[in-house]
Length: 481
Image 1 (cartoon, one colour):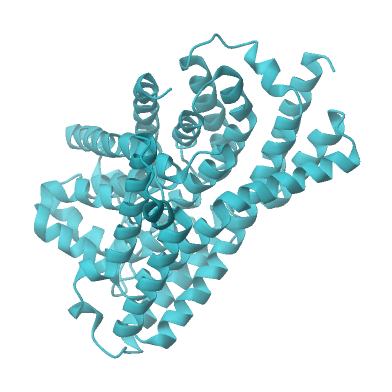
Image 2: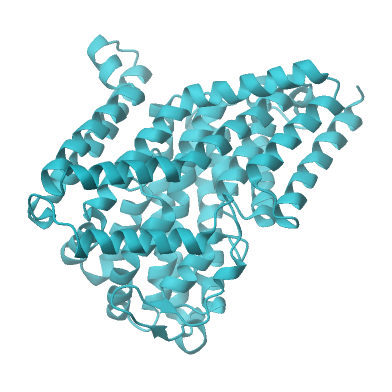
């Protein structure tokens, strides 16, 4: 088929997917599946092959990422049940002081705490953030809100075990250990620099408390901003954010005020609570390094395999949970984890189905003709496509997966490392988080910001991180072939 026809079909279908999600509020999973089927039929794959390729693409991504996402969700749910996040934030404040706590908190949220769902993390940690904010000066609320937004969103798409990062790695065939190391190289400087830039801007007068903050109706630890427009939040994953936030808050309250485990969780050292997850990430990283330097150790190949390492972490975290909060609460946490993770599995798999249908055609060869044989142009195109998709759809994960799936074939034809495509897609998907994002409204509600304030801390803050992450990815491309 002519090049112009293939490009027109793919472009029109992706635009239609965006429209039905944003305008008609169709669940992204359904919209993506319909889009994949339409591309297959309109580009000549035929009915039978279209279904076959979609099924194969779904299965391939689930084979790579399904168990890993499941293990991460379960670990996060159990840590939540044990009150580990609240204790960690309080500890960071004591250790790093008021000036250092945004960076310590940001790096924690963006790296090893990525097993916790964003909405749960915001609800759990927001009361502590509100207590920290006054110690940071007049712009404290804005600085803490930007810290939350930047670190949580960057970690989701660029840092293992963030579920979007795991999904991107599976979609593009990037070994999870390599994704972890590459993500770490980009995420750490991105988070530090983005928090620094936004903090300086806010302290120089960009943040105006009189118009960017609003009074909170305080009800214990569950203060919510007056006038929060929760009803305008988009369904980035098809769920109702008000209900999810309320459920998280209710669950958290229940764990602190009703049941008591066999011992007080506060008496258990934080290192014991987080130790299994940190050990798993260390095993994965060590095996990734051994692979790069071409050393084969059978024991490490087994223990450092992400599926095994995270499975061991699930088991060990469960044992710690049983000893601290009791078996019933651990089992309840596991059930909640499976419920919360269900749509992430399907969204990830359907994203793989769309990518497989596109890759089956000749789009990769067509795009190759428009790029010079350098690593810069394709990465910029991936970033721009993911940014545009995110502005329209409001889902960081959906836009990153779609952009990577469309332009992933270019990586193979140009000899470009798929790790760079994954990181560039993640960076682009962070650009301009705004009123279509559930994270925007959660941060606006729980951190005492006006809508104008949230536009500064969330939209501007994370957009700065998006541009910095692109720069870090381009720098990494010099060293990664």
